[in-house]
Image 1 (cartoon, rainbow, N blue to C red):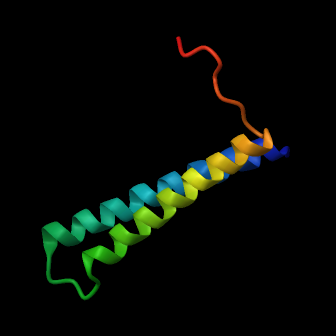
Image 2: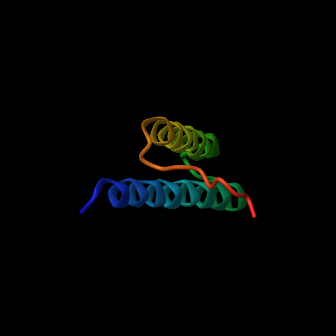
Length: 72
């Protein structure tokens, strides 16, 4: 497997984990009465979102991915 495929796979898995944590926070908010606070899952979502942005910036900086030169 090449590096680009592994990088994209890691990004997709991180994004799915972000959506999962957002869903868990929603479930706790609606149901209530859980031992875990909702902020734990929202904090994880923010942490992994920052990680995704940093990974994208590093990949752009190293030349692993390149931005689309024409936006249309």
